[in-house]
Length: 192
Length: 192
Image (cartoon, rainbow over all chains, first blue to last red; front, side):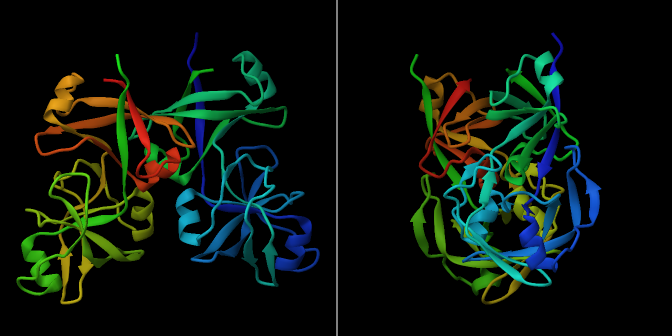
């Protein structure tokens, strides 16, 4: 059987915003300007950035990822969480019930998010047919070896399967640095 | 066979100094004050800290670990290296040939280190008899599963065996955050 090789995408800290929050932060009706497309079809890194402010620290120039979503969400690393002074749990994207909030500052205003600060749980996006070919089901937990300078095997990597997805392993900067790998690196599913 | 369980010790950024550099940074003949003992016999975290300054960033209050060594050495995470703007390689402690330097600032003076900035390669300290009992040799590369919130298996973990060592897995903050583990956690050697 062929090796199940997956490209690596490293997610730096970033934010997803609702239409309402874009209006407050950038002005009513403001449209985010796509800077570059992301691995997932239709998703893009925007030219615009915001500042995020926690009890112990602040990051300026946090990239906005578009398009607008139903709930605003800040994705940071555990290292970032310590610097900001916020106890962000490891969560799947979209699962923000009970998570801490944070102040977000844009050029036209600021928003005190009530919730939505998470450390994203590592996951692989699969297009439905790719997943089927490899016998992988949505929500399945996988073991993934990363062939970096500091080799390791990530366990509990969540499979996310959709017609709208393209094959990509998403890890955060702590995980990338622990593995000595960057975007464009290669990983292998070792136990599906 | 019993599981080979190893305590986890997470190393935050820190610095080791020569006697000469302590003289320059704190004054001639200054003696570091032990704040707390480390896992390795005779080693201690000092009360004293210094600032380290790279091309793109600076960290204040970087802890000094004592006692004095033959060569000064700064150990940072890959995340720290990006913030400082220094291309620190992954190295074993003491192997600093060809590594970048950095400015170190103390209350009495500053030192422009010519070399010695590294990202420490993950390793396990073994007391000689413990290593022998588990059939592990000095310099052997091990696979180590960390039972954290984000389970993973570190590969290429270097065994370091000495009569003067006590059993401890040393990882940096990126590695700890990627595993969701802290000092006091547990790891298991899965393939010796």
